[in-house]
Image (cartoon, rainbow, N blue to C red; front, side, top):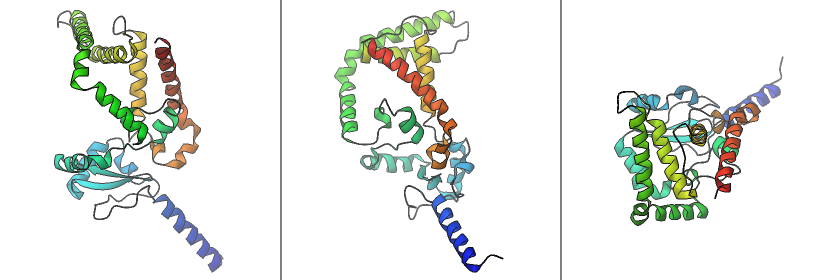
Length: 257
């Protein structure tokens, strides 16, 4: 039979383990409803793969604004226009930074830097946002119009031709993807996507960027919220593959300058 000392030590260990598994990066926010969760996972199991639908149901029970735990990270949900406006517009200066996620920021972007929209706020991000704002003001955008007109006209003409003037169904997405990517490459690299929507570079870049954007999804990468899952090397196989593919075409584009 176990001695009282052993039982006491075991109970103490269990207490601290449960407390650690229930901890979060930010302490519980006072006076804000919290969704009950489970140790380690928080509310990840309840949210599943349809976060928006589950949050909609929770809003009916807990109100438009509530807090949850995704693993060890505390997340606030805002479910109405007024609550979003109050939190993100009225307090926009306090929310100007962006959170970092293990898969996207540490694995995928470890060697290429972060985009403006995914960077935590720091002097570098401030300067990049300032440069982007200058490049997107009214006079600057007016100077881009010849490129925008050319690419939009080309895409619409090809769409009409491939659809035989609307008699055959076509998927418009590839045409708009080519328009957006070719315009962006023209303005930033002086490079145009040649050929049709079947261009290999076009398909590679759009596919890789779509997959990389999925790595930021709150429902796709639990290792972003549960540090213990980062110990499984297989969790990084796909992110590392797309990191390699993105590095390949980014290097190619830079070499074409």
